[in-house]
Length: 379
Image (cartoon, rainbow, N blue to C red; front, side, top):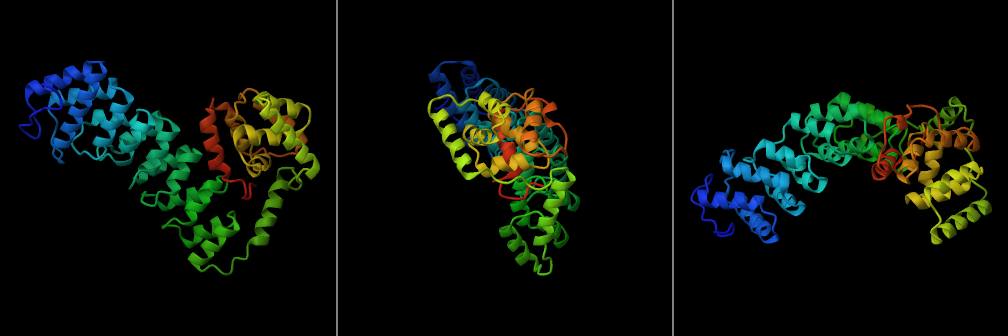
């Protein structure tokens, strides 16, 4: 008897022989058996009632074997079928929620089996991608939202700010607005957030761009702020307080174009590597450094310049990590960049490179969450 031809005699207890066949298939490694197993399991998922009744022990064993041993595609199909099931075993759901993000995503987003304790465990144990999915989960509880705020990772914070159904407390929303001072990506979703009040809107207004200011003014009928000059003065004061004087001027256009062409020529010749960034700074060629970082990291020049004028070294560290510069090299590199750049980036914040390594992909995401497109004030 194959898994496809199972006769189903009851909602919770398929025939014993069929169950044994499925368990045997679950341990088999042949392609044919894996295909039969997938079809059989999907059939059982479809036949199971949408109730909270428990699975039989044998069927539970089959699902757990699948979650631990089956190929990626089978686990992914299982996750998609069980994402909304109220009858799936908690152990199985938690295994899938900590699997590769493509497998975990539907479970984290929709499974009614996951409770706050499970979601908190994902925030501690899993990757940034898993944490982002937790932050996006509909009707997220205030307890889980507060933990995301405590961890303060840029990408999950941005996802939380865009989650209009999350149960964010008034204090939690205030903390998000405060985080948006340094995380440009938070500003747009917060400006649209349904629970933003006028007091927080006035605070947010101080560091958002022109388009968002118009939206906030229209939403809250704010016509008496007239903060443009004050914001500009605040940026200037921030630079002065860090010993930076005024924001550094743009590079000479002719020199800048020569640097750009040289970097593109190196790239075309296959000679543009992370080590070139270090060499450019040691040769006191900040323009070459900027253009090389743009090309190697896939950034815009606005983002790179935002990194070099940011109030902390955090953005520049993420940019360097995103192109493969080792964190052990960053402190001396930062020192030389500050010498060439007239002071910036600023000295506020902690030395985040001491926390441990970060993958290039995670660093690139963290950078974009921190500075957005690089066209908003960074002080």
